[in-house]
Picture (spheres, rainbow, N blue to C red):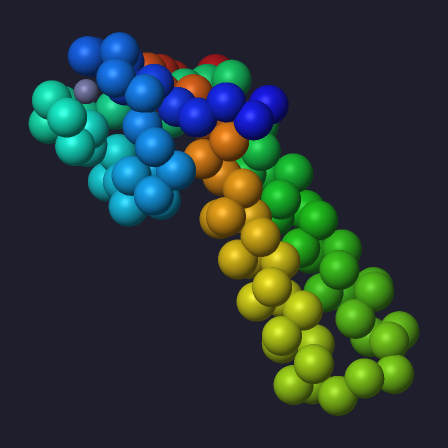
Amino acid sequence: MNELPVCAHCQQQWSYPTTLKCLFRLRCSYCGNKNFFSRGFRYREPIFLLGMMLVNMFLLPMLPISFTYKTCIVLLMLILYIGTLPFGLKLSAEEEPYF
Ligand SMILES: [Zn+2]
């Protein structure tokens, strides 16, 4: 779970800041090759989106706090999500089909 990703091409382990930096392009900063999220990792995204939807539609309307605070909570969740993304991230050398 808290393992940092390893480049699928050169097997070099990415450090935490490297992973955050490469998160959107996934280009290895050691060998320059493009990596893809592996299939085993992708299950996280729908779970996260579902969680965000539940919080937005049910939890936040029930809380007696201002819109500003609610926005802060959503932003915080987003930051937490991105901040923990490098842990357990699995890379693959080729794009794997969703199904
Ligand atoms: Zn590499």
